Length: 286
Image 1: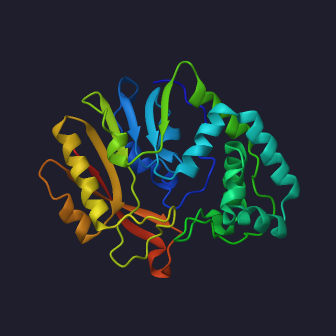
Image 2: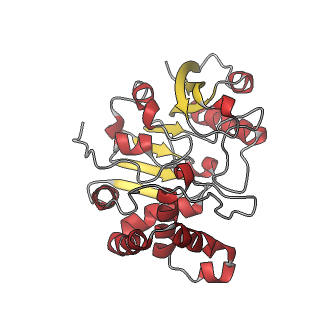
C-alpha cells in the first residue's frame, strides 16, 4: 500500500459525511484497492475517497457547485487561497449575508469566476450554521450565519495537500458532475464502486438539501438497478443507506450482504432522527 498523507482529508462539512463511519466502511474496501479503479458517484466531501487515497479514481457528484470546488483546487489553488484569505479577513455576519446573497442575482453570479464561486462555497460552508450546505427549491444557498469563534476558512495545508494528491502525475483522478449511472459506465471487473447516495427517508426527515432536485423512491430504485447491473458485470460494489424496510426489500437478493451499522447523526429536520441511528452497508460479493 502507498503511504497516505493525513492532510488529505475533507475540506468541507457535508451532511451524511462518513468520517465517523470510516472504521466500519474500511472493513469492506478491497485490500488490493490500488490495483483497481475506484469509483465514487456521490463523492460529497470525500471522507472515504480521501481516506483511501487510491491512485486511479473517478469521483463524481451531481452537485455541480461542489464539483467546481474540486476542479478549482486542482487548477487554481493559489487563486483559491487568495480569495479565501480575503473572505477570512472580512468575515462577519453582515459580510456573510452579502456573500450569501450573490446567487440571488443570476446575472451577477454568472459574472463571478469559477475560483470566486468555489471560494464562496467553501467560505459559506465554514461559517454557516452547523456547517450545513443547504439550498432551497430554487437552488439558492439558504443556511444562516453560524457565529463561530475561529472558523477554518482558509485551511492552506489541507487544500494544498489535496491539490498535490489530485494533480499528481503519479495518480489518475477523474472528476465529473454527471448522473450517477453515467459516472460508473466504464466500471468493470477491475473496479470498485462505493455508493453513498442521499439516504432513503420514508418520513422525509433525512437531510436532502444539497440541491433543488430530490432523491426520491424512484431514484433509489434506479440506483438499485445500477447496482444490479454492475453486479452482473462483475464489479465489486459497496453501498451505504438508511436501515429502512424499503431499502432492505429493494436489496433483498441472495447475492448481496446487508450489514447493519450504528451511526451518529447531527443533521436531521426531526430531532428524533438525530443521535445514534441504524444504517446499512450493502455489498455484492462474498
